[in-house]
Length: 73
Image 1 (cartoon, helix red, strand yellow):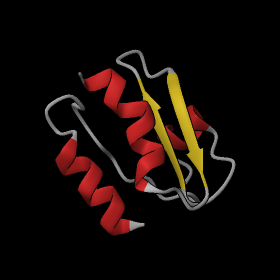
Image 2: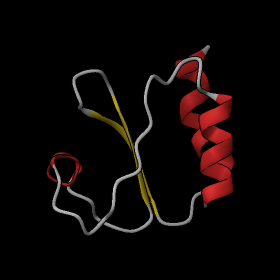
Image 3: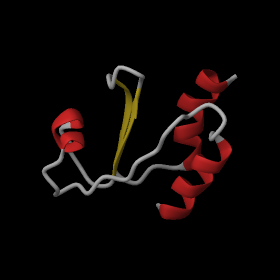
């Protein structure tokens, strides 16, 4: 998944302000905020930290693009 994630970061860096990698097992503020349900898991949050979209499990690049493209145009 790392190559896809790195490519998504690069492709959308102009419209996504911050990306963070969070350890699924670490009890952090992010863990409490998104309440992970699987691994790997990706969450898109708005500026108020509300979850806009969530991907769980192996995710194809096209699945990210389907959600991110309309937000970044």
